[in-house]
Image (cartoon, rainbow, N blue to C red):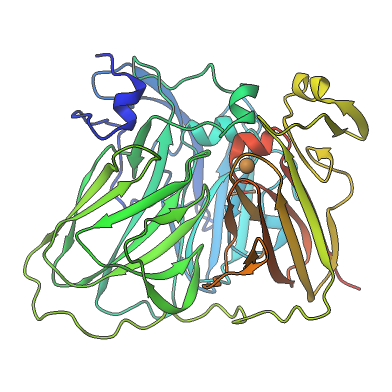
Length: 469
Ligand code: C2O
Ligand code: CU
């Protein structure tokens, strides 16, 4: 069956994909020494019903990978075994852990084919996080390598069930196979990145999920797409936003009628009251009808009308505000991309023209440098209050992500932001400036990059160092 891309993106497709999914809480195998083993395996899977098989890359044969779930202050112990024929590594997105376990090229050597690496760290923050490779990420994540890392509160909210919803879009061909030609495509990298045409939730297309009507429902939403900014609607409920990127809001906030925007890498925890109404999750693509992507049926009886308070989740210790009086502002100018007028940039220490950048797969620059630099964008002292102005001088939105810390967005285009929430991934509109502040309290070498994975690969990455003394 040949479906046009347009049909797949709009809401009119009747058939369902069948990426084989797993029971949500499936436990990965635990080795004798207490390590959960994640083995990367290539497995044939049908993405589009009636379509041909693709070879997905999976942790333990499933997509998404096994959910890693611990309680706050517990140890996460994961053994990654690389069954690919290329190097990989595991990054723990958003969680403020020990730098040595961050899983970026700044903190470890690649895990070569057939080799293993042990990750062990204490989970300092409760919340919704995720894991994914941090080299060759455009190819590796798009092939299916990602999973949820869930850190439960010491006292989880009473009387609530939860449903993690791992969201992804895939770029597939008309025959249903994963598009291979676009990997490394510089045109795509210079535009919006690898935007998919087939949407899955927990590895399934339009799943029907269930939750009891008589309990509150906590949704954990994770955007694991390579490049798509999701604009999510929750129909049939009036959710409260409880946490963003893992960090609890000071006070729960009604989602209201605007869609919830999650950039690639972003997460949100929502709380929904007891009710019997069916919930529909939809994603609003520009100019299209909202695409319904999942349904949640509330089963059983609701019981008493749920009007009780929903109290904020306990804080992970981040301050409510950051005092930036007298703090110097460090400026990161983002340039390049299609219609960006970039004429050249520094590449591996040498000033080169745009043509040569493109020949090297580069299309973007931070402060005039394409790709990773020897020197950090900022050298910070442990405990230093830090302010960045992120200046997006491009015709494209971006999703800027800092490792090892959360940042507090303060202003957009010199106007204070009404609701200031701690984030690890911030969505920036084209041609806009965002001021963010944070306390550099986690020593180490931390990447700062666009989480649109093709943008990152094509130049949008740098790093900050946080040092004692
Ligand atoms: Cu989720 Cu540097 O990445
Ligand atoms: Cu970007």
